Amino acid sequence: MVLVMLAASVLLVAAMAVAMRLSFQKGFDEYLSEVEMGRLDQTVEDLSNAYRREGSWNFIEGNHRLWMTFMPSSSDASVNDGDAVVAAPSSSRAPQPFTARSAPLAPADKTGISTRLRLLNADKQRLIGPPDTSGLAVNRPISLDGELIGWLSLTPQAVPSSRLDKAFRDEQLNAIYPIGLGALLLALLVGIPMGRYLLRPVKAVARGAHVLAKGEFDIRLDIHSRDELGQLAQDFNMLAGVLQRNELLRRRGMADISHELRTPLALLRGEIEAMQDGIRPVDQPQLGKLHDANMQLSHLVDDLYDLALTDAGALSYKKQLFNLVDTLEGAVAAAEHSFSQSQLSLTLTVPESLTVLGDPRRLRQVMDNLLKNSRRYTDAGGQTVVSASRLSGNAVIRVEDSAPTVDTQMLERLFDRFYRVDESRSRASGGAGLGLAICRNIVDAHQGEISAAVSELGGLAVEVVIPLADDN
Image (cartoon, rainbow, N blue to C red; front, top):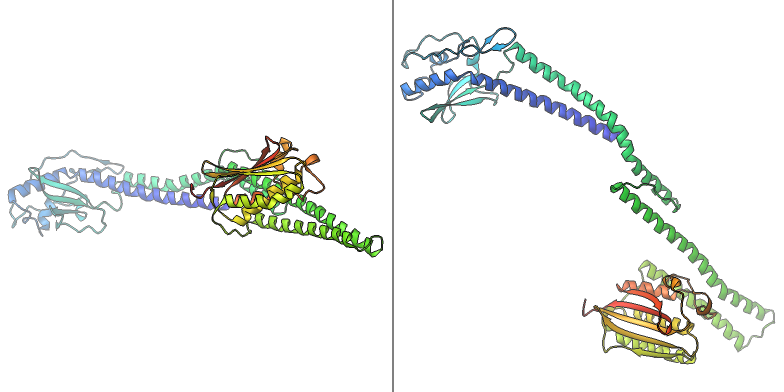
């Protein structure tokens, strides 16, 4: 990067030096031409008077001898004293009357201006004088009684005639390159340290990215500037934090999965070995225990599979317009028998219709999980109330139960995978702590929200919000 900045600085300074040299040379030549053109006042006046007498430019076309009589003399133009060009006093001269057939004797052109001066008509067509091959000619209008009658065109000198003018021009042109070199050195002296200073945060971000690539997610960048690099550092630290949390969740998830799988597998192994050793009889009660342990293991594997799919966004959703009330009624009807066996009452309060765009089977899975958790963790003799309503263009579903409740500090973690509340709401019959995590992922896939709060009935209240299709 420093080499790129160095090369860019060299090219920039070189381009500026060349541009300054060309600009100065062009401007100085134009200045000399304007000065020289300003000394042709008498020539312009003489040509205008001649046009008045003759009535046209026919008298001068092709008459080089006559044209030379209009050339400014050394006293009209300038006197070169060897060191400077000093304007001499202008002599008011008026050419004597002449005809196209005769003209006064042409004076010597001591200034050499005749090789660069030409007369043009009003349409800028050359009448006499050498053509302009440089394309840099300066034109001065010739007027008569306010009407444009022609142009006096002068080509700039290739080299200043004055020794002082030439010396001044050469001095300025030769000074441009040392000045450019000095500017380049100054730019390098300032630019290289500044470039290293500005690139320091970028290098820190690059080093941090390499550390993240190695799996070390505890790195943080100490950059607190208020510019784009500071914002980049904040985003980097945020990314590192998310990766670190995900890594912790992954490790904890692997440990939790191992623990959850170990329990039913250990039970199966112990029961089977006991049967093999003749300690336990091979009868229906023992086979029932093995079947229960196998079903527990199957449910756990199914939950892990569903969770993996919902986390990856790979769970298939067949969304359609349907009445959410039908799904709620079906879930409650299917759970009534199990609630009755657990000595719990289950009631449902819903409107006639709640039309949503979603997957009925997946939302039914959410309701089944919520009702299963409520039945599993509610004390016998308690109640569970399921309600649904419209609110601000959304369908709001609430599943509330009676005691026991959950500590408010633990509510936010209920939807974490493998998280189970200790004490009263954690039973031997409890699941692996995956149900609510799956519910959250399914609700998120429906652009909804799910949250938990303490219920007015004394237990837990879970609220699910799904956008209504007829309002959105």
